[in-house]
Image (cartoon, rainbow, N blue to C red; front, side):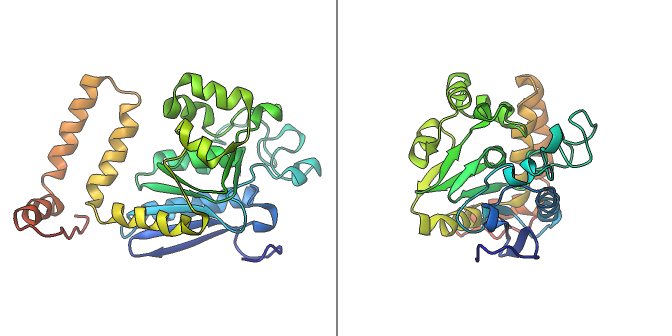
Length: 274
C-alpha cells in the first residue's frame, strides 16, 4: 500500500470464507481519524454484522500503523475533528446523539466477534478502537500509546469503560495516568493484547483465529457475545435466567443438532447458522 494520498475509500472492506477484513485506509496519515473514516468504518462494521455469511471480523490498518488517533494536522489547521473544541465538525461537545454511531460504540453493540490486528502504533482513539474489539493481536513492532493525559483529554471513545474491566483498576490507572508508550510485549503483560506475533505473521494469525471462530456454530458464538455484554450489567441470578432462555432457543436450531450428530459420529461439524 502506497503512502501517497489517494481519493479512494478511507476504509477497505473484503469478505471471504465467512471472514470480513476491514482496513483503515489513510496510510499517508498513519490512519489518523477523519470524520469520513469514522463514517465509513461504522458502515463497514454494520455491513459485516448484518451479513449472515460473515462469522468473524478482522480489523487492521493499512501501511505502517494501526491508527494514529486524532488527525492533529487537521485539528491545528482548524478543520476536522477536535477543531475549536468541537467533537465533530459542525457539532459542539454537548451535541446530542453523537456517540450512537461512532465505531467504538458499534463495536460494543454488534454481535459478530471482532479481532484487532494491531500493526505499528495504536495511538489515542486507535487505543480505544483496539479495546473495543473482542480479541487483540499485536505485531512485534506494535506500540500502544495511551497519551490522552499528555494531550489534555480523556479516552473519549470507550477507553475509560474498557480499561478497568479488561485489566483491573490499578493497571488501568497505570496505563492512563502515566500515559507511557507500551511496546507490544508490555501491552501483553498488562493484559491489553491477547498475543504478540512476528509482524509478518500478524494478518495470517488474525485470519487463522477468525477462521477458527467461523468454524464454530455462528448462532452460539453471537449468543455468547450477547451474553457477555448483558452480564456486565445484570445480577448473577438475572443473568442465569437470561442464559437459560438463550439456551432454549439454541437447542431448537439445526446447528445444535448438527453439533450433537457430529460428536456422536466423531467428525467435524458443518454449521449452517440456522
